[in-house]
Image (cartoon, rainbow, N blue to C red; front, top):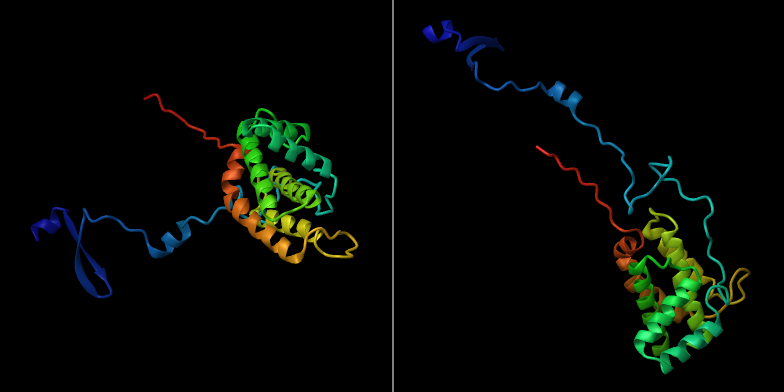
Length: 230
């Protein structure tokens, strides 16, 4: 009774039952108050992997000029370019050939000279594609088309910071289809269906599976760091 009068605790009536409530007991928010104060999910800047439909405001809008899949025969990489590449690869050392490919990419405006990481990646990609085509006995026309499709898809990917991997896959697939179907109004048969399927599998393994790393090579990684002097 003395403890109750001293103010250390009080008697509270709740549902016709008496119980002791200690003053030091932590105060809990009511359930309704908790529901009202609960944070709502916020839509922030879209992730590189996510859809842009939730945020169409600048600067996250897709560029208006979007390249559509089309025939690439003798447009970006010609048969003469391929014949010259093979000749250099057979006559010169591997380091000289890699330098030739790097200069070729610069002449075609496929990569800027100061982006060494992306240039190194594209040079290695071209080397792998040339080896891939040699193992399948592709002629100069098929090799030129393979290089052009890969390089054009890479340009499509890096045209926009938030290009989704699904969009890259669809672009590559549709471009390859235009070089597969015979008597197509907007295509030309270069590869057989089984060759196209094999190229799709190769693209998925070599390029699409590593697209987060390719994104870093093309755009870099930036970190904003704050330091507190105290």
